[in-house]
Length: 203
Image (cartoon, rainbow, N blue to C red; front, side, top):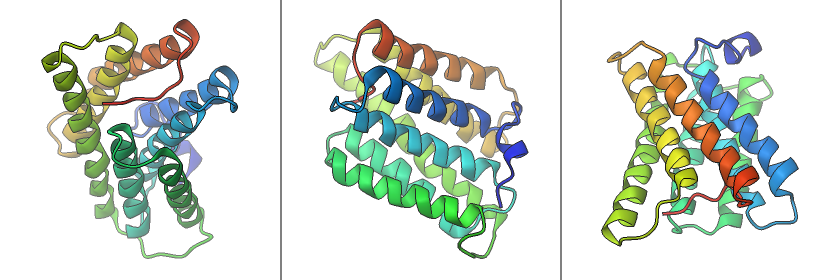
């Protein structure tokens, strides 16, 4: 079950994903705007980030919560790599997120299992792999790397790496968390407010 105090705990591993998801929603709604095609991407990413936050914050997550988080994280990466169309991907992510909320707030009953949190490794590894793929592709093809996208991709990759290290017990320090979050937030704000782009992250 999910408790709000655990979700907003600044020392928890869930907090940076909560902040990133919330900022993506605010930027998508109030800056990008619902009329633009990039709006759907911002919402897609934000729901994936929030799913990770809810899974990590849950005291006794269920297998269904873990699976929905893994599904949302997988869809995001496949959409970003242009392997899945945005609208089917967004619909599936919304369904996964609603199911996750229903389970965590007791609407759907499902057996809890603390070990389920390790399913967060799935979106972490995928997001880290995607960021590496993005930079590798751009560099090998001699394509430009705008600073805003560097910060955005690198920030999310650092957060994913930090999540892997913290969940595996290899690191308990928060400095990597804050560096990743700050870079991702600056990149997102720069993409929308500075460049006037949306929050589409593509490979």
